[in-house]
Amino acid sequence: MTADRSEREAFDLVVDRVGTTLEQTGAAFPYVADPETGEWQVTDDGNWCGGHWIGLLWLAYDHTGDERFAEAAREHTDVLADAMVREAMFCGMNFHYAGFRAADVTDDREHRDLGLEGADASVAFYHQRARQIPLGTLLIEGPSSEFRGPDSDEGPSGDVLGAVDAIYTSLPVLWRAYRETDDPVYRDTAVSHADRHLDWYIREDGRTWHHAEFDPDTGELVRQYNELAYSDDTCWARGQGWCIAGLARAYRETEAPRYLEALERTVDYYRSNVPDDLVPYWDFEHPDAPDVPRDTSAAVLTAYGLTGLPDDGETADLAAFGERILESLITGYLTPRGDSYDRPDGMLLEGCFNGPSGYADRNELIWSDYYLAYALSRRLAA
Image (cartoon, rainbow, N blue to C red; front, side, top):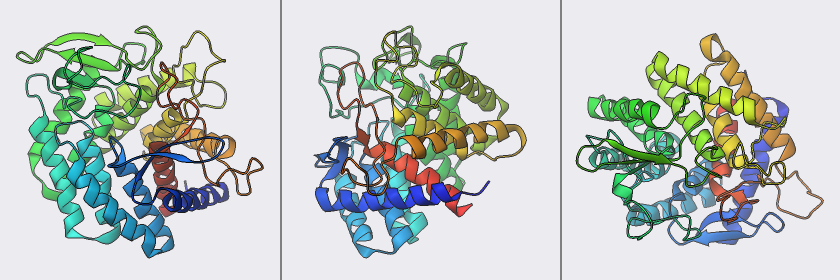
C-alpha cells in the first residue's frame, strides 16, 4: 500500500523539524526535547543514539538536496565514529545508520566500511556461550539510579547482561553486512542471537522481559528482570516495541516460521493491552493507568517494524496494524504546521524515556523522530 497525503505531509513536517533542530543544536547531538518549547537537551557525542540524528540528517538531505544536512551528517559521523564504544549493543545500530544507510544515500565507500566496522564489532563482542551480544560498557546518559553502568556497584556488569533491545539494536547491521559480503559469520551470529532471544525474553503470553543476566563462564541464564518496567510482573512498552521491530526484521531476512510465530505473539500482547489510539502507557500494565504517561517511542518502533513487512500473504494483518499505529501517531501526536502552542512543526510528542524515574517522560525523543521519518520515507518510496 502506498503512502497517502497525510503521510506525505507528515514526512514534510518531520524534515522541517530536522532543520529547526540543526539550527538550534549545531555541532551537538539532540537527545530529548522540551514538549512545550521544542528546546533540545544535547550530548557532545551522541551517547547511545547518535546514529539516529545522523540518519535524520541524511533523510533530510535525500529529500531536499540541501547540502547543509549532508555537511552536518558528515561532521557528526566523524564525532560518533571516534566516540562510540565498540563493546556495546548500541554500536551496531549507530554504525548501521551512520554507515550503511548513509551509503544508501551517498554511495560512499567510507560509509559502507563504517557499517562493516559496526558489524565486525558486534561479532567480536558476541558471547559464544550465552549466544548474546551483551549490553556492554556504554554509560547511558540519564538518571544514575536507573541507568547502571558496568562500573556501578548496583548490579551486574554489562558484559554479562543481555537486553530485549538488542534483537533490534544489534542485529540489523549483521543482516545488512551479510547481504553486502555473503560472509556467513554475520548471518550466523544474527540467527544465534535471535534464537536465544526467543528463549530468554518472550514470555508465553507475549510480553517481554527487559534484562537477562547470564553466567560469564557457562553462558547459562542466571535471572530475568525488568529495569524500566513498573515491576517484573508487567511489561516495559518500549522494550516490546524493540522486540517487535527486531522480530519483524528477523522474519524478513530469514522467512523462518519461528520468528513469525513470536512476532504474532508479541503483537497480540500489544493489541490486547494498548489504549484505543494504539499508543501504550510506558508500561502496558501500570496499575495507575490512565494517569501515567504514554510512550510514542514504543508505538513508533512497533509501526516501523510492522510497516516494513509485506502487506500481503501471511504478514498482511501485521502490516495493516502497523499502518494504523502510524496513522494514530501522525494525526494525534505530531505537532502540525502553525501549531497553536507556538511549538516547532513536526515534533513527535509524548515519548517516555524513563518511566520509573520520571526522566524525559513526556518529551520529543530523537530516536522516535528517526523511526517515524524512516517509516514514512519507506512508504513514500513504495
